[in-house]
Image (cartoon, rainbow, N blue to C red; front, top):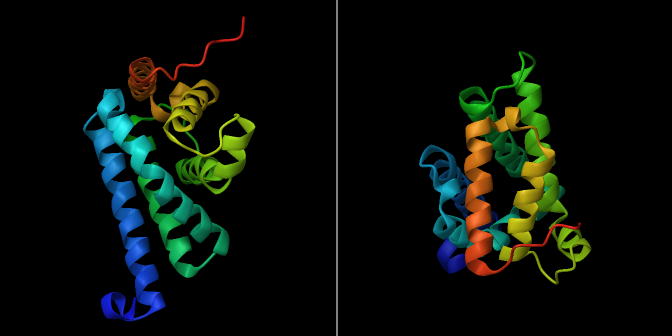
Length: 171
């Protein structure tokens, strides 16, 4: 560790930087480049995100200044996306971004419980797709914009069909 990073703190800084780079890249590809509609993008994200989200969840719970900076950057990103794509009635955009970010990160922090409650051993690709679908079901399309909501829903549906992970609706 010291050979590559010098200290435990420098290793943590490198991990934090990697996590934020991952999140920025995924957000850009998902929203700006419309990857939400691409099952290949979703499959890649579903496969690579769990360890990143596990690290992020632990960092957020620890409450370090670095975790606060990561949270603040995610709020800033969310605020920009809400401003660009959202169609909420006029209100406190910053508060909306903070609350939405915190709600989404709650899944990250509680990922083990979420997976268990959904009958899965780990928060893998199938669970991620189910949680993404459920998020779209409970969040107003006005929050993310109807176009983005429809794009995400179509992408998740296509991913689930191609991977045989589509849950049957209770009738």
